[in-house]
Image 1 (cartoon, rainbow, N blue to C red):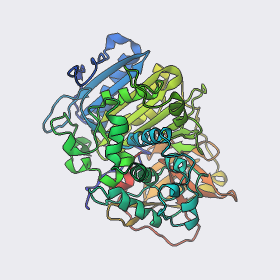
Image 2: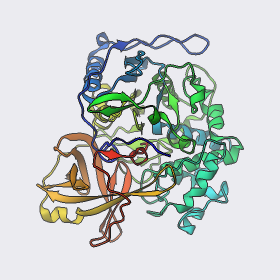
Image 3: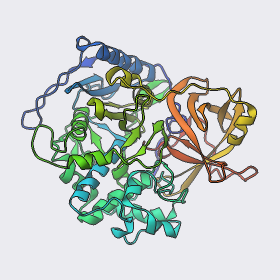
Image 4: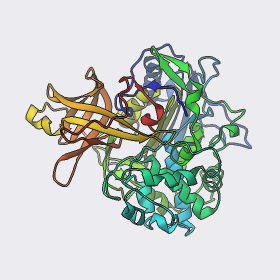
Length: 529
């Protein structure tokens, strides 16, 4: 399947595009839906609501212009009150105002819906988090035969299964899509032993979707709707495009010469990836979902219980191995990424990226704060980094900040162990293993990444093995990454965008399948986050 090339976000959004473009940023209130479908609409936030909202309003308006974003929807839960606001338009060719009910792709925030559905099945006694996956999928095969017997349900959901995670194979639109996808796990290289190293894994969460099907006897999407989406009253959250006819939908936009251009093909997500990133939703529904996860397990506004509060807490505790996923992580619970702060207050987070649709989602349970944003442009990744990787919003609304990171200048001798060629692998829609190769070299106390000879990023260390990701020009992208060492102390991996990228031995022959221009990369290598 051919997918159009997209503007590269400097290897998995590590350095985001920065382009000035004319973009409408008119603020719109969020009209209430019909009472039969939805509770009364929360107020749209406005400058008179206080300084944090005035500053957020200006931040979004400025970002839309700077990064070429036609439309943004934002929701905030702050001091027990919900605030929702739409900016700009759904489509530059056929402009319709964005509001709180406009539908966007939410990308990998879908993973938390998969995880929450698993927890419902755990409470029903149909799944156990620490049971081997083969208990429910006895035909599971992996490249390392021993892994199939050892990998657990929890490993799938906390990104420690250990095999290559970026498998974007299209296995068709039939109800057997996840079954066929699961059969392909056997060809994915095993990078690390299960349970030992965090490496972002779309394939593992997609396999969890197949697990849900196996124990319920129903298609993944039908089960998630029956156990979670419909009970919560998320009337603007769906998997299939034929379910959203008549809704106000945000079109996906590419950036061409810094200006947003509609790219209809970007909106497609094949069914094999639904458990990892297939949901379409509105900011109003996302905020209602956040309120549920911050609550006691009952449906917001009712006494009907979906989960025990203990299960909700379990989803955001017991983190697996940590690392980085654009921010520093304590690890991942049950699909929620768990992020530390300087004040030792935990941030519970996700977000999603798919070509032309980028979003952020975070909660601070100890502060009763939730924040979500949906965008409809490749430029949305940059605004998401400013608001969800940087601590700009956290400082203003929750009174917490990121762990400190002051860049240091390292000597050539200190940088030498990190230098060399690195290889990133992914499986494309046709099932072919793709490889992207780049080189890291020392330069003025930092590392520079060269793709096909062109400098694409810079890495500035702030503590051993951890670094800030900078643009080629040295500007901060608000994102972090780290190196992973083997048992012998050798630098074996670069973890960038949460993925493990292999440090190739000196003198090893190139394994790259292609050397694309630095600013071009196919969508499946961008991945969902």
